[in-house]
Image 1: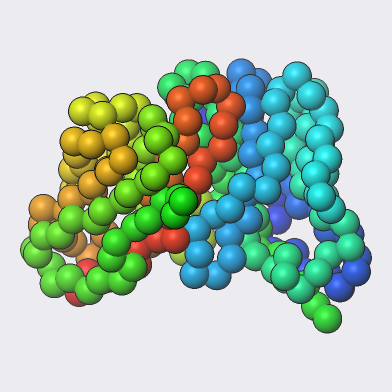
Image 2: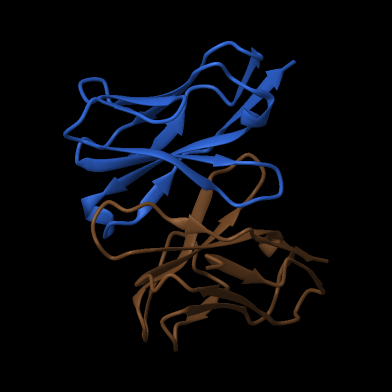
Length: 113
Length: 113
């Protein structure tokens, strides 16, 4: 069935390293993708988004890459900091779902000092 | 500008009790959503609303009811709470224009004993 999911449930990196969080989706009709960050005890916060007509978008220390050929999305965090420790969700918008977002299960990123 | 505010933040209910979770947004967003988040799972959509006076079912609507009498408020009701409804509930809102991310509240942690 259709799904949005993450390759790895946990990721541990050293402070200062770059982090890459991956996400796979199965619906080629999806036209919009978002990455959210959720810190413990808080609601998800928007990080960055990308439309399906793009393959890369950069923000402050973050880059999202979209590979429509293999239906893969990734979030790259440069120079990871302890404050980046959180659960990261990818979300997908599908036209057939009335523009509602479907969320993946999340990846727990832990940054070690 | 407070964004999305959820009340209460915590609640413990006995099985069979009823309660209402309140979500309020001050951004004049048209769309509002209620999600539940359970350990190891992504956000699952309970109900949503695309405008004042309209509501629709999401993925897991059973056991919940909602109302959107005012544009800024979206209420989630549990008529007869069950232990399976123990979860963290998040409200979100967004503009109706295409490809806008959601703004989330900080969540309500509900325990049904």
